[in-house]
Length: 608
Picture (cartoon, helix red, strand yellow):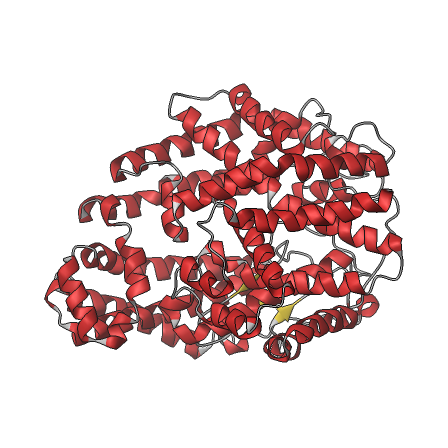
């Protein structure tokens, strides 16, 4: 799951012919077709299984012996697999062409049915959490197969202090469609409908295409795009302020009823990470701003011949960067060889993605933007989506998503409930795969200019992943704290945004009038409050992990595969211990940040 990137502009020439033929998904491993009897069979089974589960177990969990509770959990897991298989198929078909009304209807109908069928299961976690600790411990001690699910139970029971009555929980479940969900849809539909008149462009552009211009080599185009964004955001800023005010207030109400100590606490619980660990990450990154982003952007201003950078220069290509197109087979070869150099097994695990229709790579009208790896369910296999245009960055995206895919394949042996990795660890294999590929490309650089371009690109990606995301996290913390004191005007929110932008980007920047509204388009703030720190967590963790690998730790490969195979069955403290790492150690994050600083050191040395 990479950082969201601007959607590529469709180019009919950048398809199979020029890039060597791009693979498409074969979704028949999930279902042969939308009207296949297997799909109808599974949907009918799901409806009956959920009703039977509720009839068999509701009100009875505390009275079950160990064997009966194990059977109950396994039945719940089987329901999870079938529901997941149905929604994976519907979702992946839709992502291939979001403009196809049949696919959109198919997915919406599937979601409605699955939600309706699974509503009787709401009781399970609520009732399970009321089982007495001593009784549950005795059951786990009596049955090793049941005890294997303890990490799942621990995550469920972490919510016990914040659980409401069954009636209130059902009410919130029903009411959600007109609460946060409705405001999310309003935000999405508004953003999708915005059009931007960019000076020099013949037609109005949507948001994704306008954001894409911010990486154009032509500075005039970049400035025109930034000013067009500012103009349209300002025109709609009252609506976006209303969305954020309402969602933040709703969250405050829910958190108060659930007795959450902070607005961030629910996210920490779902990520299975301690608040103090996240605080240590945040503090380490903020303390490192001067030696990371501030220093790098001063270098970039010098390279670009500017006294000050403008916001439209932040992601600009370097003047020395030569346009380069990488064919699909070359990209596959680069990533496969980088994986194999670390471990032949890693390359073997990635191979079926290329040969069995597990990757959808081409840029096509209606296809969802960005890139992802979808684990589907543990009884099938993951699928990777790319929008491959042959840019060097696309090669890194391939390496990243294949890392997710390999991780998901290895964790699948844990079963559906234990395979899912918390967000804080979910980026481990992806970022590590990216680092392996980057190091291979860096070692193969044929000139100082090529090495400089590669290093600068990597530093910018890391700053976007670490510095920018922590600045986003700080903005959210300030926003929710301020909203608890009362309604926020658009100017109030703008001021919070600029306070973190100036702090994180540093003195190399001048900020144009209008940039203060750029908080408006970040979807994470609306859809997933406080999600953003997971990106920085993953990058910092892998940087520290890679430093251990580079130091020659004996048995690193075996330890690394054990970490990936664990999925969500172990806590991050237990998984990192074999590497001599501890994310709760305040000095841990400095290890990862020092790698970024080291790359900037090398870039500075090139200027000497």
